[in-house]
Image (cartoon, rainbow, N blue to C red; front, side, top):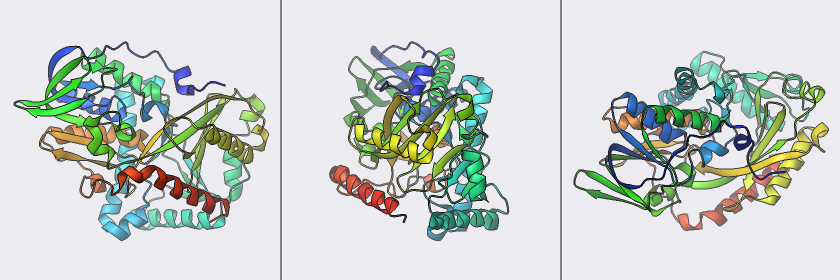
Length: 427
């Protein structure tokens, strides 16, 4: 078993990029070389701007290269909840933006010829782990039917879930056809190669130690260079604690570690019984478990890991859960395992906006950022150009520092432990 990710093992080579050396100028400095930052850079280039991307590690090193590659239009906050709190029009706008984000991702891949990203929209199944959870999924399907007049997500029976997943553990589910999976690291590297071809400045191993306002814009300093930019876009998400320069964003987020395992190559007769239609599946537990096929391997992920590094206990728990969902894989060898940080927000919504004059951000995807990060990267770039992009409830109002943020780690452990208990007793 390797502690590396399946994505690293199967990705196309990354472009060779330098660290920032010496003094440079640009129109917009982008801090963070993941989906958000790269999508923002591409949008700015298309608008005739000169952006520069500064990444503290290597491109895609954070969540963009560690996530499960699940593409979904959903938000962690339910549409019914949005309507109750913010009104019907706001909820409908967010419903529509979830699909706009998928379209933005697909259009980027098609326009740039990033076939190595392996985008496949074969559908997403939310599998109900209890009858109570199934009732909640029915409410979601009814809300979509009633409020949108469509059937973008439909209830499927226990038998249908068994047929589509190969597991008889679930009580039924919600099928969303316009969803699926992607090779996330190949997507990030494909975006990076496109920008390199357009002679955009991309710099790795260039952590931004400080950002200071000075005449003409902002001075960003790294260990070996500096960059003077008229504007700054922050796209650091769950890794906003890398340097003090993004501390103000870090205090608005709750990083939560998510872990993933990948099996050995599975035999054809086994593959024929697991997810034969190629859908991605996630259950309805509070501490989410999800799975999808990538080639001839099953990857299986979930939340519940803690701390700043990989957790042996979390990986063991995932393997036990894998055997519960798929008894025929209980003894399957695990070839890859890895983890990364999900950036949670108090309102369970992503946020994009303006910190002050000339400084912008897009962060807080709550574990659902594969499509949204491309969309919000484009929109925050548009915001920096003086446009008024469509952000819905993701606009920055109310995105304030979290009280007692320094105590978030024990708080997250307590909350997660309680959620694990509720999952265990079937609530």
